[in-house]
Structures are given as structure tokens and as C-alpha cells.
Amino acid sequence: QVQLVESGGGLVQPGGSLGLSCAASGTIFSINTMAWYRQAPGKQRLSVARITVGGTTTYADSVKGQFTISRDNAKNSMYLQMNSLKPEDTAVYYCNADIKSTRWSFMYNYWGQGTQVTVSS
Image 1 (cartoon, rainbow, N blue to C red):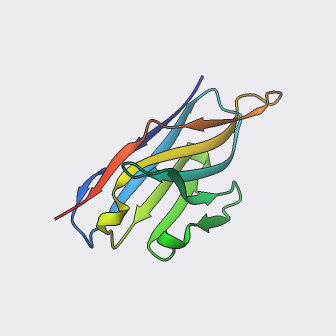
Image 2: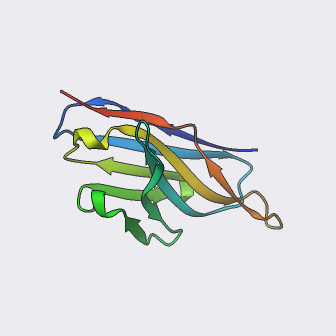
Image 3: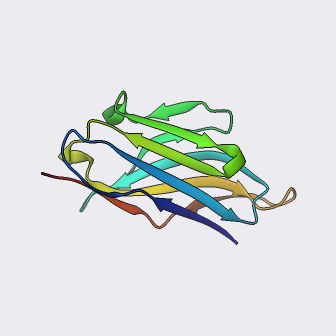
């Protein structure tokens, strides 16, 4: 059984910063690409940033230069540093990862339960 658990969400004022963490636990052999998504009320879930096992990063145009994604492969963890936050960054942020549980298993895609980020004065 594999779980992804996000932490670090909360309420922050416009212009502030917040850091999110995602920890994978359970039976894990390897983790391939990890990613952050977000879903604002009444809108689709959209990709924010992704990072390969080798550390190559990709960002949505809306967060380039504002958000930084990173990972610690030894800890099966991923992070999202969010700076200069704006009200439009308000959303539930989800962790996503492609994980193999054993050497012989398929790669499956997993989601965390989400963490709320609210940017408001």
C-alpha cells in the first residue's frame, strides 16, 4: 500500500511565502516523476510543476519564477516553495507521483489527499 501525504498548507497574506511537502510511504521500490497539481473552486485540476527522478523540472507558465519544486529521493519526498503568493494561487494543492512498489510491479500513479492554500488579506 502506497500513500502520499501533503503538508504545509494554510492561510497566507498576498506577497507571502509558503512551503508544501509531500511524503510517500508504504511499500516503495522506486519513484519516477513527481508533480504538484492545484484545483481552485469550480475549476479543473491543473499541473503546477513536475520533477523527474533526475531532477529535471517543468513549471506551468503561471508559476514560473514564483514557485520552486524539489525532491529528496532518499526521503521519498517532494517539496514546493511558493513565493510572492497572489489570491489567484488559492487552491487545493495535490501531490502526484508514479511509483513502483516492487522491482517486478508496474508503475502506478498515486494522488495525495490535498492541502488547502488560501491567499487572502
